[in-house]
Image 1 (cartoon, each protein chain N blue to C red):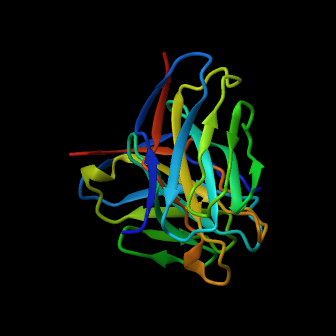
Image 2: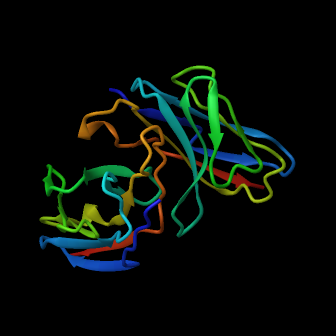
Length: 117
Length: 112
């Protein structure tokens, strides 16, 4: 079945360490996104990529980095510069095909819960 | 981007219809209204979306007012599994921009 796979489901990081969250999709979607969610809050956009080898900062990009070397993959690195990284991280994708009503919906992964210890 | 306003929370009785309102008074002519829901500790799930006509699928119905300034998501027969946070979102008015902005949503609690 097509979908988005995020790994790991739970991740613990020591202060000062970089960690990378994986996001893979087999939906042939062009655009991919990373969101951060804090307890009781909505989703905030970190980075997004509409095509391979191109990505843009979202609303809270500081302390994060991404790459998009393959269409299927959009890993997120949480660097030591991110002062408060403990959160729930969600990856999503969507097709860029236009003209039909049904092609704009996001598909989300199941998330990675990152905790700084 | 058009903003949306939703109630913070609402309760619903199991088996009854749940009507979730959303205001989007600054919506532009070609912006779509989307609804997603997020069950605790899971990724958001797409429910339905529409432009100006009412829409229905196996999960819900979407009623959009004629002036498109508000909409209502209807869960026809709520079950305990429908307990979740429901997000009303308006898609940005740019053909090459697929960012969706998620606010706090409405926390819906279905009670037996």
